[in-house]
Image 1 (tube, rainbow, N blue to C red):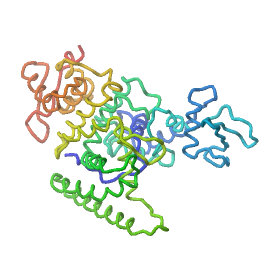
Image 2 (cartoon, rainbow, N blue to C red):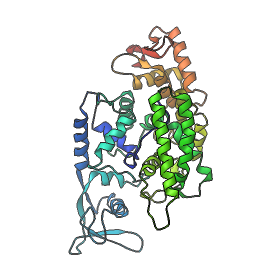
Image 3 (cartoon, one colour):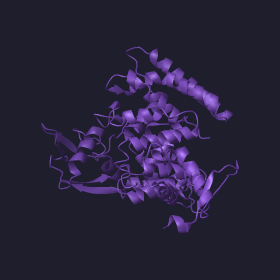
Image 4 (cartoon, one colour):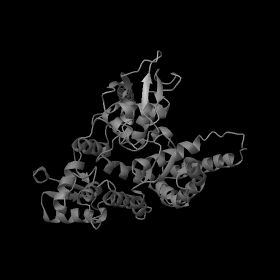
Length: 420
């Protein structure tokens, strides 16, 4: 069973869009990690020419100023100076104060300057590209052993391709269906504990406020890990994390006003989770490059979905499905993925999630079918049972156990049926 609490995270794993970037740097074939890393580096070294005539010009300049990539002194990442007028319009100037009307900019800066992207924390660079790849492996989008897309990665790539938005990896499209499920499976217990503290937070609250709560959060989640997780090594590692977090919180509490504290462990454990919630619209920001948060438009949906999340992996799937069905993700990014008829939804879901060889997991088909149907009564459990019933009635559909059990876990649907 996948643990519902990640042991490790860093601020460089904050953007879900980096998962799309890793998918673009890999594919279904086996690949050495170094090859994927080089591909990511090449992507991030790319430049794009933007001019004052482009709609992207002013958002890009605003982004560069906010990130400190251009400075009034001309000593930032880009060797331009900037001026800002009374209404906030930015102008770029060269060393001779000549206005810059066109320039070549790092592609990642162009991507993240898009105003539809809610946060610019954790921007990928050539220097931190290893974190980008490790995040994709950690979230089981890319295989750790083979370097190819996992079943989740394959589905995410297919949803993104069908959804049509492939130019900017940080604009999340229908692949959100995969990423929400992944986050809930891998870190659902921690995310639930975090969002349960929102009612006690000031509005807006900042990262420091959540850090103060993080010690009690890891203790709470540790109780679930100790009770539920069978892997003794994981339980021991989580106990070590609890001790580490507690020690760092005590160190913070003991500092004097004159001392500065190196957040380190706490910053890297808290920041990504707040940023994932920002990507999911459960949190919002007034400043995209600040660690300050308020409730997002989907906070209530997220909180309600978390009520379904318990100690089992199945409950995490149910919670993920409930969030996507109730939130505006279903009417926006997933708007073109809709099918009211359960049988047709099963066939469409199977076509999306089936592996190249062999059967698909029933739970994967049921989850995707639930996304298509968007009926709260058609949850993963109900749709899994429905698949088993279909197999009893249709010779084109067969179910079987996996290597651990004889009870139905896998489904195979003949091509002539799902390709109709």
